[in-house]
Image (cartoon, rainbow, N blue to C red; front, side, top):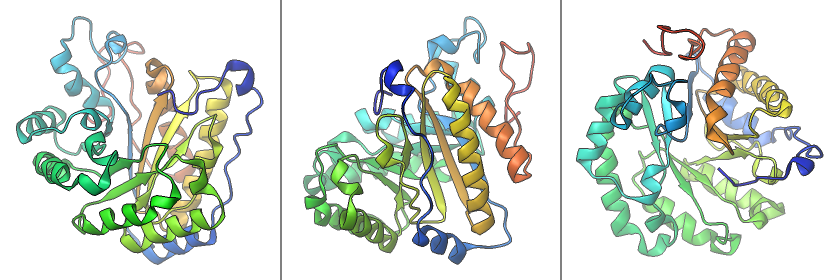
Length: 303
């Protein structure tokens, strides 16, 4: 993932501290507070990593079996493949079977839709038909708007969101810098909250504005972009664990935490560290993955 990438020299000067929560974030969480413990999901954006052979996947593992192995370690996936091609029901059913029960897919809305919301309704129907085959393995969908999609088009976004099925769990990511300034941010947040849709939080070095800490639903959808296990990656995770613990105490119901690296080879290490810290701080007992390179014959996350 190249979004927000900076040079090694620039990286040393980035201020990674998380912004304070808005008053509205606390209100959203407190309104949803219940005695039920929150559900945590951790995963990556890809499973088809050949460089994970010998690390997560046994030697000589066929690509067709990568997803089976991926699901041994993680319980969710940010499914970016659907951004490039709308999947059919048969393909989705195969993915679901390979991953098994308890695994959640968060499909990214196809670019044929996000590039033109006004004309994308036909493609949306096709997209929804395809992902319906996920059944109870369907997590929140993810709508990533093009960086050129500015606040001047908020009415187009609102109209599209209101047109979608009300029971479709959806999170929106915007990238145009003007969305994060003044009234534009306030208006977008309020619109998403009123529509019952989520607001993606992306934590990446070169765009600190998209790490905004505004929850519009009691579910958090976080895209963390690390820097190949740079020392700051671990401090950033520690800060996130503190914030997540705060949200849990206030009423967070679900957490989807997707790990990215500019070199995805290193994502598994940082997910493991995140789970360990969440267990320590939040008093939960999420199984910690043990990878093949660490111990032959070890269990996966959900064996």
